[in-house]
Image 1 (cartoon, rainbow, N blue to C red):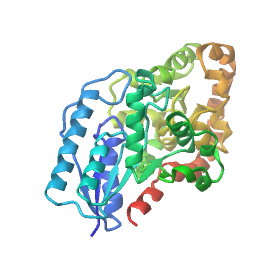
Image 2 (cartoon, helix red, strand yellow; image 1 turned 45 degrees about the vertical axis):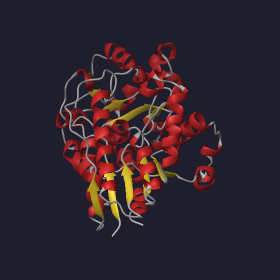
Image 3 (tube, rainbow, N blue to C red; image 1 turned 180 degrees about the horizontal axis):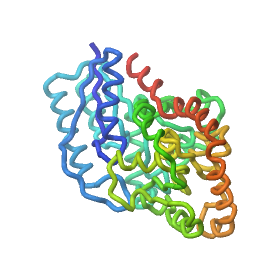
Image 4 (tube, rainbow, N blue to C red; image 1 turned 45 degrees about the horizontal axis):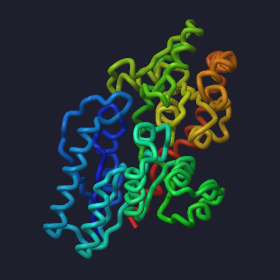
Length: 365
């Protein structure tokens, strides 16, 4: 029987990776798949400012995963046709996995979920490393190792194609198959977050406060300074920057459940879990710029978007500040009237972008 090896990103309590560690194997187990998790060494993480990961710990985790993979090959545990799923495709060990597969003549199938990389100029890697040849060639090599490269949004595919391979326009074609014909390993899937609806339902029942929440990490591309300035101008509302506190997942979801708006001014977003799923499922209306992946996931829901130009930088924000204030007041005053729209969003966009049927179906073939 074909075995599916899951190579997970390290589970961090503050991120969805903790849920993924259990949830993805469960999705496959329910379909009768034979699943094995390739763990890394669990090193208590430290803090890397502006990033979710501790860079030292994540490299120890990946390196120990590689040792496990090599041992599986050495002991003849890997069979032709077995499948590997990297829950974060930016993992250099995939190159050595491909190396082992080819040199030992054991054909396997490799899947990867692409989150971010240097191809996104606003991402941590893009800002710190940029387009240096060593990172760009490494990313291209990793991409070519995958038989299936999974992306959550067309927007992200577009950035990836333009910045890494200098392919323009084709990734924006309305016909997904035609758009991806030249890079047929690229596939679209919602992220495996089926558990969110059930997990967050109790928080959606909490009593609402006149409260607005900023759910992102504190990093330049998230523009928290805009949120803080709005808070000074609208003292009649409560304003919460989640990363100003050390919150448990329960405390974070409680804040979302008590809030009426989840606000974003991001310059980088390839999906938008907090604004696109967690906030809405907790009953918080999203208010996001009409750019990035937000334009895609909120397509047909213009009430949740404001013109991109309003927060494209600090100067433009100051020019359009009153317009943002007016929009916030409107949403706060009409929260209950907008609720049916949010409920419709739950039934149309959440299943599309936050359930992983295409990925799971492919793995089970």
